[in-house]
Length: 234
Image (cartoon, rainbow, N blue to C red; front, top):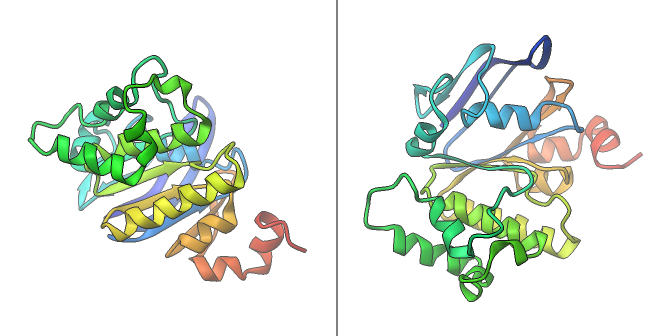
């Protein structure tokens, strides 16, 4: 579904992503893990069209999309729930959700809105409330629900558990699994490497803009190198 080949991304003279290649097959959860500054968020922002690559190519469902405008990429079925949620605090929960469907012209939006409320009941219960009054975990649910309103084939999630309590983190990870079971392919960037690898079909480890290790989620969970560097084990 997604193929990234020899991707390079630069900020001026600084090369943040240094020729990485990876793929995401339909129905998979694939995770990118690594320390802060490894290039994970930059990679997602480039795939979604918010940044322009300085080299390499990106193909989504067989079509090359590097250089395609971000709103057109969303329309093709690739959605991005960004780091930090980026909700609109003064708008209501429902208004935030409907922004996810802004580019749609079909008549299924009310149905998908109801599906978001079923997936995250708190959003339906407080749909007329300003989104800025939500807790961090509730805002994360809203950000994910908003992305789902675009009806993505592939959903990219950037640090969905950042700043959340352990209980809320487990709820968000369970939701990722639910979305996969409903047919959504997931590309996940997540600070909790253990939780991400438990969900993932495969994973890639980034260090300073390069992929240094890759394998199935289970292989990376049992890798001595990964356990010491990212799972806090000796």
